[in-house]
Image (tube, rainbow, N blue to C red; front, side, top):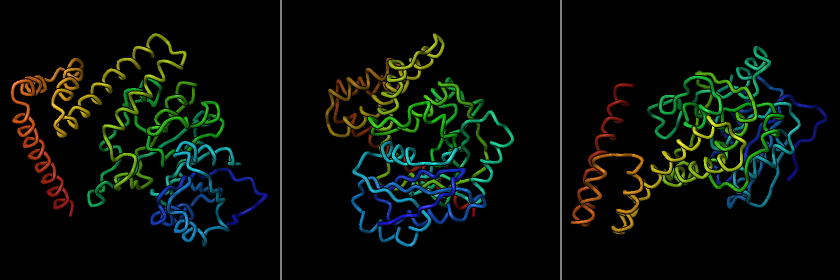
Length: 336
């Protein structure tokens, strides 16, 4: 397949990895082409997607507007890096191929760069589409509080949705691009390194995109895997970065917390599978950090009556889900 060739050097290069999103990527591209800011190039990287025939049929009408690259699968990090290396713009704008921008997204971000020449990376608020009826924003559930520094990104006081990021290409290159060894959370890993290397990160609470990350099969679908990935990334920061004493203390504290959350979630899976001894061990390790009295009760229950304990825990979890579902439904009714 051919793609656009031009001598014009765009100000912004849009980085769009594509994997199993043939049914969604047209909406993403349309949202880019509808931007009020138009000095950009679009780089779509087909990351060895199993839906390639359908994807290329969808992309055919856009080939005069995009740079299209087809490569063997390297996961999201590898696809983004391929696009970054091809990018000609001074700025990089990231958009996953199942997400969409609102029409003023790029113009707002570029205006912020013009107002503050020291800014290196800017992100924004966005709608989270796990339940589109609620129109819940990302910052409703993942707030950004205070400056987006390394020591605030580590404990996730500031959380960065990748599909809203616009950054200077040079700061992404200085940080070493995305780590292609990582299966998950490669964006969190990169933002930590970008901040550590001195980049000034800003954000706006203005809603400028719509995320579709709650769809079945997305990377965010598995909580236990995400927790494990974050824990391993924090261990990597501790191991590989020349941290100050305070930074190292911050990283190790957060690593301990995330590891405990991961062990707790893994324990629930083992309990549900009937692996009672393994579940008890995991809960015990988790509770050394979490210190939850009820978790101690579950540990004792698994020792004396494991099957009964599993049934009780299952009933409690089911009741909590029903309450949460009812609250969500009531919120939708009120919103209407």
